[in-house]
Image (cartoon, rainbow, N blue to C red):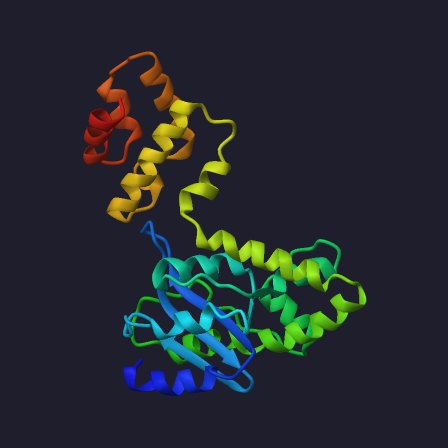
Length: 265
């Protein structure tokens, strides 16, 4: 939690090829996730970086975007998203142990704790999963939980890689891992738009307007209106039906109503 520690971290990460990564963040009331803690594992060392105390972490960009290092993550898309939106870093070389395990066991998706338990006689304490990571100081349980979330990544990777090579699935796992993490390096609206079922041009327009508003105000899009109301809003506009009372019922606040009527209707 001190800039004096950065040189120590840099010197330890400089010459290692395998790095385990995890993040703790809050994404309940904002458009962008708030990165709280960055966990890094190498060999027998674990670093916990307080990202609320240390705002300037530009030194990590060169390290994390290196193609000479392999970064081991579990469910890499969310961590890649948090790292990209908060630090401007695009992960270049990723191995996702969740994807690897899915290939090994024939398609079953497993959480981190279950994967660790499969390869080691360890049952991780997951009681801090929904902890308040924005609160300071951290509790000892939080720090222990955070450290354990990266403690086994590299060793699990090594065990999985042996199995994947025997099955001739190692290259495909690398490819799929990189594809998965790359989704975290794009604007949120791209993946969210894909989830809509055959939206009309007007629905897309309203959807993108909501995304821009949410991004500008740094609030979740659902705080403006819910996805299920998208088609209804489209019908109101299509029928040229300026029923303010109906629109007010759909929107969560008066500012959104005013902006919508001015910019979209």
